[in-house]
Image (cartoon, rainbow, N blue to C red):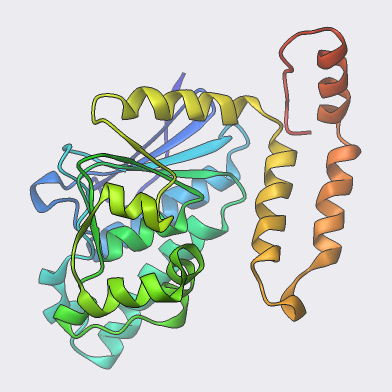
Length: 268
């Protein structure tokens, strides 16, 4: 069964199928460059996915086959990032998009094909897993544009590739291929272009069939582990684990194991 998720623009396509929420950037003629309206749409769609209990996993991708996203739409900067007030308004929209992408309690997969540059790479870094085609290209060209990247934008990059690699990416502003991105630890998998759809479909089917409360707990606890020790919410970690053991899904998992069948988890 297909169901549409709410967006604010037709440049963001969203639907739900078989426990999976799909968010697709629909601006192929611009290499899926992210406009102000698209930042707003991302936040709205992700909020819809979070609120829908039928959505177990989310896939983010770009239409057209040539780009995941080439980054923020620089042609809008003259108008929407030229004054202090305009910059603040733009940053609120992009910040909310990043918050919803990062903060959703469900696992997210960036399915990357082609260009994944600047703000597009930033979106991919918000996702839990990144799976890319072997012809994908990555980079952060901020140093060629005079842009500033704040703490929130750089923290996930440094966390994945380490400070030495992050400095190389940022200082050179060069583009690098999928093999190098994989070696850096930036992406989880590299696949031929004709194999990625089937691989991601299989991945999402596997994740959607697993226990949602367990996955939610694991995602949050990993996030807590990555925080500074003084900022970790260990009480929340215990609460999430306790909820798993108190759930009907835990009973179903045990029964299914004993009966040698696939469990039917309900997220309760």
